[in-house]
Length: 372
Image (cartoon, rainbow, N blue to C red; front, side, top):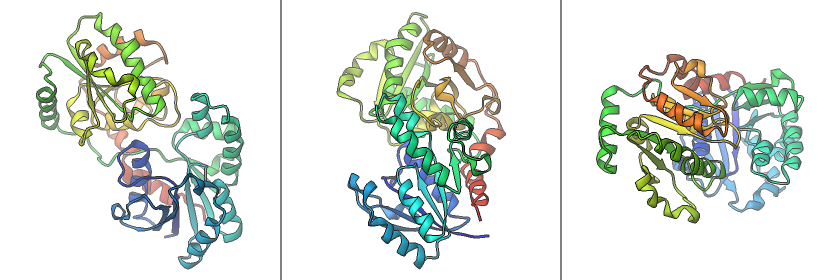
């Protein structure tokens, strides 16, 4: 049965360039096929990127999160469009979602991208406990929560005391349902070799992420300070390409690492060329919550991947056909060994991987699980 669904997105997602932005924009794109869909969002979002009705009524100011007058505006939208379900992203607009549920008679859906409180705990924010209690309250009031990983779902069951039937895993996805062809990968690798002066016998490792996000910055430091020195000592021909914007000033001298086999490519217009043309993706992330979107994308491009335990949360190695090598957090000697082992893996990612992480399948599952 088709429902009238209103999504409330309180930050910039259009144009979607970062993993978190893609996670919402692409979910909405595929989900809106199954239900009549409306979006309320901030003024900074460009509605031309959406195939559904976008209402830019939320302020770009941070005060938007505590503006009580939005309740009346959204209530009017709910009544005029006969909205039956409201989706909020993260718990931050939970107070608004709960009020709407109480006074408008809609079903409240929380689209959770991680346990936000735990993410901020890992970033050593003193107020994480306040957020933890607020997050628990919001999720307990929701009719259903879309969890990004099974690990998050189990945490919500045991720690937030939410009934299992009100929690379901709706993961991050990719828009293609088969790996790139061998010819595509060969051509992409030639492009990288020519652009970055990489020799044919050099293995190409890739790390990608927004570098002003602390978990990604910490992962980069892990590469530079811990992993790369170990690998250098092994005397193998290789290059590590770092892609990502907003490199902090403290690392502006990253170009000085070229003699240590590090290439800083910065922000690239077409990251798919780097995924297709690299041999191994490295994911030495030790903190931060939720599924790592770049990990899913790398595996979808048929890359071999070396990851920490934290970095691999939400991806079952059983559906990766041995292409996902996981090492303990902080054990960089093992990580470097796994990087060498990953070179020789030649089999392809499984069809089961795409069944799990293809956006059309994910959205269809979410659409059928809306509470009635």
